Length: 176
Image 1 (cartoon, rainbow, N blue to C red):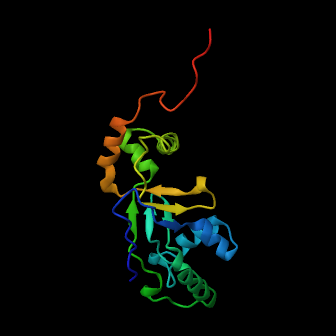
Image 2: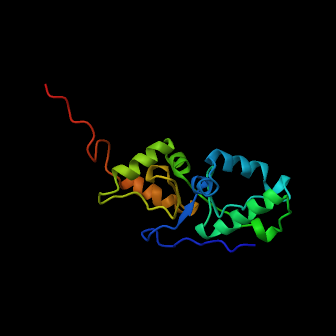
């Protein structure tokens, strides 16, 4: 079984970056939807050759360490040859993280609001808590941040101290 990658205990350090289905799709010249379909079709429960399991999970997004590319390429060769995989070929200790949707639920707001908070307060003296991990997308906007669930209190403290409505700009009052 693969050893899980442990993220930094200090949230202000550079967060570990994982690759998502977008990058895997590029390796095989297929769409990300095809990779998602493979993950369903070749799941551990219903295949002799399961896809490599993700190292991290943030809601519905899965992430793999980039060095697991070899595991994906070997999986594809076995898939084409209709060969059976051994557990060591695909197993990983998947670690789950809270994504923007989860953080939003802590405050009763949508995940999009959390994403806007991250942008709005990024260059202020009150930035949002830094993510522990990121699943890298093909663009910065497509990347998915994740926080250890035990950091909920840190988020609650941040929210209590963040500047009130209208802070950070917003619309200017209409001139009369």
